[in-house]
Length: 416
Image 1 (cartoon, one colour):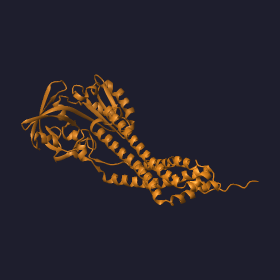
Image 2 (tube, rainbow, N blue to C red; image 1 turned 90 degrees about the horizontal axis):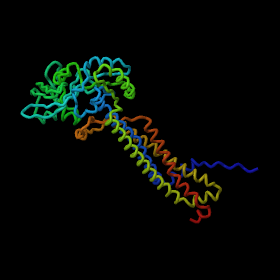
Image 3 (tube, helix red, strand yellow; image 1 turned 90 degrees about the vertical axis):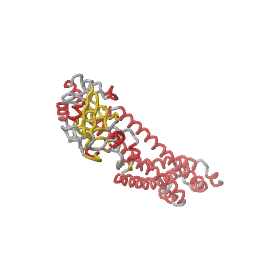
Image 4 (cartoon, rainbow, N blue to C red; image 1 turned 60 degrees about the horizontal axis):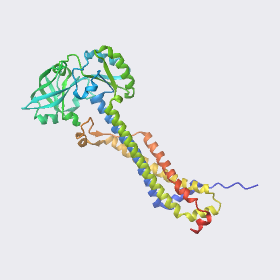
């Protein structure tokens, strides 16, 4: 009866072999560590950017559901005030009855010509329910000088950069000229009560914020608005609510309404798709670079130990055992690098979550709603996925060196 084959402690041998060439092991583990750290921090960074982008865009432009008069979106770049929502209080009240709705805000957007201090310039008038906008567009948080305008009085808040272009100061009087809901020319004399700084170039360079009733008076739209923004507890539920609201509110507005979720708004959706695709390419390149370094160092290790493998084969170690041994070394090195990289990437992400990344200089040059301080959004699944990918990549990268290790016969290996 043949004696049972003695089990070879491959994992222990692999651990011993990693300590024989410390420099090479550290080089390979460092490649894995850098890749895993990048794969841990990268998703946190991108998630933070996309979360900030979505939150800012929703608060300033789209809401989670945007309700407009049917046909407005097709002419959006002209901001057609004549395509408006009448009896807006009735529409707002109806939208607020739905479960999951956090707030419903009517707004007026209208292009205006600002005449003051001997010069004039085009701007964007925003008519807001200032009290309810706290926590959303939040004009109160933008006030850098002066105060918010008050409903019932001819007052406005002006973007500071826009005010500088017109040489306006707090207390100055200007005349706003714009198209009314009846396509005629309307005008309103207002006092600048404050200067606003949002950190977003799109706002600071063009914005004029007025109480909703004053904007309604300028565009001759008493009781109306050009859009209604619905904010939800769960933004992912927005598409379903948009469909329900469109069916419910359509009969209440002559000409009908269109309700779009934030996912249905072309610019936002396309930018998110581009960002996700670009991030996927970056992750692939990181993994490929780590894999190439691992293959190179593991291959050097195998070539230097050809005689050792030949001796092991001559002493009865099967080729499959040699393959498993090399793969086990790759696994051990991969685990070492994955643990270190996961800890490094997590620590970096959590630190930046507290301190933030100041990109105000860059944000001011971007003509798009974007906050000046970005905070990564680290999640445990990022480090788990990165560590697993790093360890698996190390094992896969060791396949070719393992195949090279068993190509030679024991006699050929011993002569090498």
